[in-house]
Image (cartoon, rainbow, N blue to C red; front, side, top):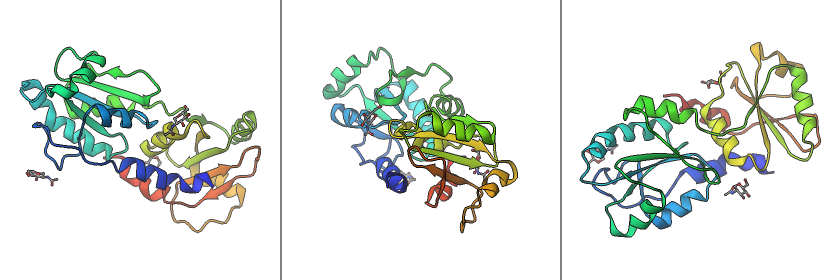
Length: 241
Ligand SMILES: *[C@@H]1O[C@H](CO)[C@@H](O)[C@H](O)[C@H]1NC(C)=O
Ligand SMILES: *[C@@H]1O[C@H](CO)[C@@H](O)[C@H](O)[C@H]1NC(C)=O
Ligand SMILES: *[C@@H]1O[C@H](CO)[C@@H](O)[C@H](O)[C@H]1NC(C)=O
């Protein structure tokens, strides 16, 4: 079943190959350097990523680098951060295509090449960039307000599987947003604030997990959920630093 493979797919997607060093970032950096070829490859993934177009000689780029690095660490690969050295001859066509006119130019690609990039024009500080980027992930998650909304929502598009995250918090975790963005073409994603777990309790599903995070999965056309018992809950705890 596709859903059982989701965390594995996600993990494979976030473990990207390391690229060469470019002066501003160490080889061991969480920020990976891209060239035209790897840029294209990255853009094939339906995920939110951030690309800084830089030049090694640029002072503002040097100032940005440690802040940018912090953002990359905070996102912990869930939203990968890249840099392109526009000073390198081979990268000039790419930087030209991207309309880069000054350094650094930071762009967020909401969904690979499937959505137009958004240029970051805020303060070049990690906190500002991080919270801005958090709000730009086009996750399309339906926030379900009442138990009765869940059934209605599942029936609305009975051709697709549905997955709901039940959480005791009203916030949608980053990991759920990232998964929803990546797989939105295959299934519908929802979120339900299950205060005290009363909705989950009413379903009388067998549950051996200790986590309060539950992921329910509805097969296409089915209104009977199954409990997804994967690594999701464990992975979910890495997302808020
Ligand atoms: C990365 O490499 C640099 C220089 O070699 C070093 O100072 C730094 O501690 C390393 N960082 C990590 C997280 O390994
Ligand atoms: C990305 O999404 C599109 C539809 O929006 C889909 O056709 C394509 O297969 C997806 N690519 C990946 C790598 O999942
Ligand atoms: C619920 O969501 C919050 C906010 O995203 C997250 O920190 C937390 O781990 C999730 N799980 C529970 C049980 O609240």
